[in-house]
Image 1 (cartoon, rainbow, N blue to C red):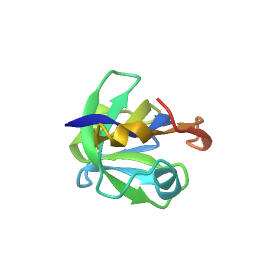
Image 2 (cartoon, rainbow, N blue to C red):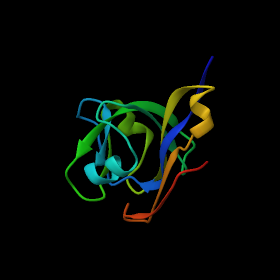
Image 3 (cartoon, helix red, strand yellow):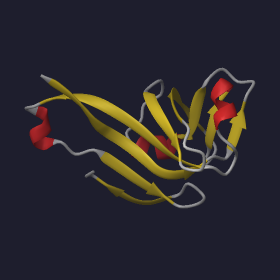
Image 4 (cartoon, rainbow, N blue to C red):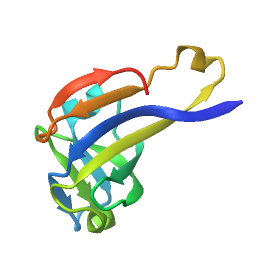
Length: 120
């Protein structure tokens, strides 16, 4: 049996840009994505704390420090400076869950990493 579980999340990141005219995705600061174990092209859910919107998209790695940009049609679902939680899930066997350790990256208002923990 496979169980879908939290794989990784970036908690309370601030939207720095929203680009309606770009092909869909979320652009995430390359270092921040790396620390959160997020891969380019990986599916993520975006949970907007400010307005309650929830939607799925995929990761593009960005080169600007602290960048969190929602691209394409989803740009209508957020506002710059909104606080979001970026979540990725994974499928695990019951055997794999014995060593289960999701990555949780806490950031400040400038999307700089404050801490990383490996638990829900």
